Image (cartoon, rainbow, N blue to C red; front, side, top):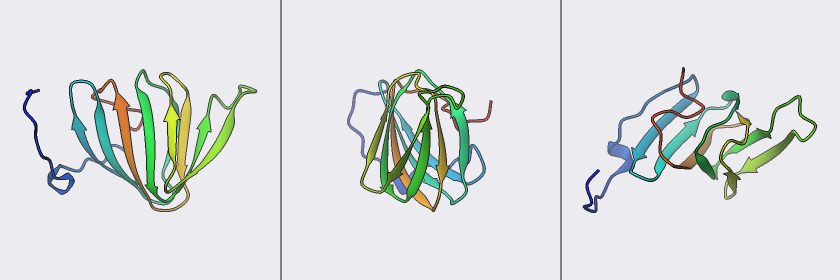
Length: 120
């Protein structure tokens, strides 16, 4: 990466679709990554975890996040709606289901080429 300031238009970034019912645009920097994510109603990503710390900034919509592994007594679900931010520390298992069309900004640190929605 360059150490020069850049202005980027989200609309000019390429859209990728790593799974059904998700559109994503990403900016990957040296120390963080921002993903603009649009989930369609019915989207589901199974429980996964990653080294990245993740901030899920819910711009609009409604999702349920499963926190932890389902067979763990500490497992719980959180309803997240527009205007809320879910903070996911590094390596916390989580899943996500969209109950309506949803618009999210995901911030990840450190950046990585893949996240939990990328096909392996």
